[in-house]
Image 1 (tube, rainbow over the protein chains, first blue to last red):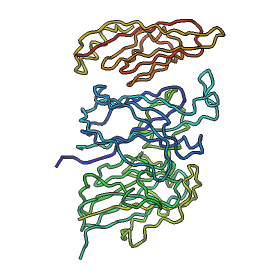
Image 2: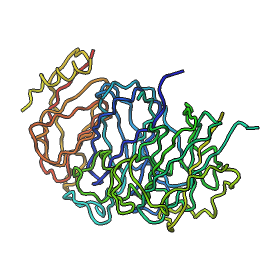
Image 3: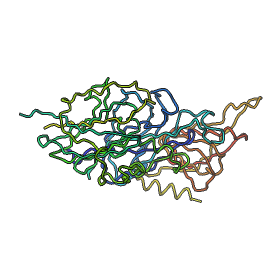
Image 4: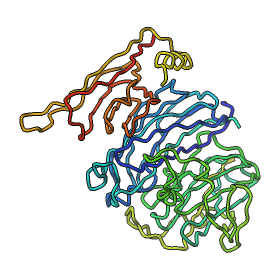
Length: 142
Length: 193
Length: 114
């Protein structure tokens, strides 16, 4: 049996402008030795702009682990406030170097027209900030 | 005679928006594995943006910024399909179990203007240490603070099934669903031998 | 200003990647309009799979230029000499609507790993 225990490590980021990409740059804690699963979901915010309870893709996320040595790939982030929304984690088997960087970027794909952001890049009142969370199911050895 | 499983519960009462409620309890000594956890709540809308942190024997399982709606089952989903089952059960034996539930925790971060202009990663300190007041005291740490009696959890240990698993009339899953305070959140610990 | 060759050399060494070949690579992005002035194209796409492209002249590109790839998305919001961004995979360079010239050159440092 593998040593350690499973913990769930969230990385939250906020989107403040529909057209500006968000850069993710954070150090994973030392006690995380392995990543077993990854799930990235919309947390809050989009519901203030849309009356839908499901939008299949609100943005694209690219993630790299181990100081940019491993590109996990690109994920679609849905907005899903339905009760039957999936809880599944994507399978991942990433041995994490201690204190390594988790890097990536996120590109918003919704509410990008001129009603939400002017040509000068300034957002209008209609735009609401929103938060996306990446959950890492990790093996921790603390 | 003790059978194989037990659904131990903790009830939390959320009295007002943005409230932070802490509880601690102890697991049944006859059961040695914590296999899963679930929350149940009356108003579905209450869960979006609320967070739930969880520790067993002082070791973190969920960070305080873990979203509560990921741990909840509703009327059209059977408890065990939406319950979070741990792939590696957490060993317990009369273990101290602690949790902290924060209502509308993430919404309070949306208006913060101190980030980088295009947005970016929210520091864990901002998520975990918020200006939430309980009994006039600022809550800063997971492990050390006090709360009023009437705000705290009732650390009961009745069988979950005995109390009935129904969660009352489920509102339509409208994203902007109305939340009425107070509401109760029940934490169910799935224990096995 | 950062010396691009040194920077890339160090980056690759730190990641344990050996460089097989590297060179500077100028990319010209044209803005083509029809007779009426409508923009037909103002972007260009390259396939840079299994290679790294480092953008060297971010400060010379118009503000609002958007460069996307599998691993990175970049929007030039301000001019700075000290930004070196890295791209991998399908790279798309898109000039902003406010750009009215006919062409613009992006300079990359292309790295092929062993």
